[in-house]
Length: 547
Ligand code: GLN
Image (cartoon, rainbow, N blue to C red; front, side, top):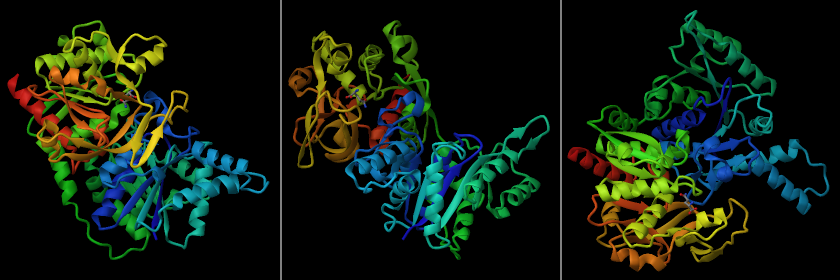
């Protein structure tokens, strides 16, 4: 039966609760324990699938096809444990389940209330799979005091009361602001945040304090006294140059030790940190640098492509180089020559995206990479547009385009080399969708197998011909155009096992021109970089030697 660690946040948001949870998970693993991490989000959206990437950052997709919060990406990258559908929940989903049950009559006409109906639903969610791991880490989104968060805080309070003593632990992440004028770290906001927690019946066992400066002994003692935690449970969380140093940094300040002590686990198994030492060494001691342009639409917010940025870093670590990624808004290339912007880069990546805006600029970037011999990596939309570019400029199909954009404009303007997928096979089930299905319900989501052509560039990169990768899209490259495109040199080197859906395209003769219909970035880890990203960065290094 698992022990539970609940991670809450106070003072301000964006303190890195997800990262702290992930790093703690990795540290527990380093001592031989199995872990699972979970995110409970108070917002009312049913899932993050339909939330704007500008507001919410990337949608992280699990193998079993859930569209989840990007923190699940951190969890996977740090622990290597594949996240599941049941590892992420929002108030919206909880309420919609409760209301569905009410409509079905499951509550036998009782008055439906936050306590106990909503809180029970939350507790049921927390318990899923509790006998599978040693530690279950549950992060509550938002900060203490948020109105929407209350049912979650109440649910974890009840939950810890129902468990035997000593099986639940509360960790609270706060900020110690630094006042430059007086040269002091201030503890008052943390005291208030803990007071708020205690007013709803929760007492933190561990205080994790984000701080730009070391916490002096006096402040530490004050925090312990006023927040009612032990002095060795006031843990300093300093800013780090790389997130991949987090497990080592948290270990150095005694986080895993404090957690195991609080559970009364003594003596604790010794940690094996070689893996993380190796990761930190590779991040901090690169032997060179490559520059990659990411040409996309959601470029204002780095978090919109979080996993891509991380996967590029992993690819760099594999090759011992620093990857400097620059985000370029593709719309620029609809007005200006891409050469002025892209000439200085060693590789170009066009990531996933939805909608027509900026796509003509992405097509220009693909053309530039193809004709100049610059490594090109097209992911999802980036593959669809590479195919469109080849259809237009190599095969002479001048009006080639995606049905997605005709749907949007309501006019038929393109020959659909990329068409709306309405039926596909999942395992031995056939799935059918039509354009009127709910938003969020119409995508091919989650892990699907693909078969790679023997002897192709990608089979070499993967070191095999059977792969499984995660998908999140509605549209597919149409195999009707396969022959036309292969005649002009664009090879369909990866297909769904039934041969119906193109999964990978490549361009023999070009140093590195690969498009994939799936999202390889979601499976990359610092200690296990995705082969496509590792090889893309290698190709970028080769390109950097040429220029
Ligand atoms: N908009 C495209 C589709 O739905 C690509 C999606 C993506 O890049 N994730 O097929």
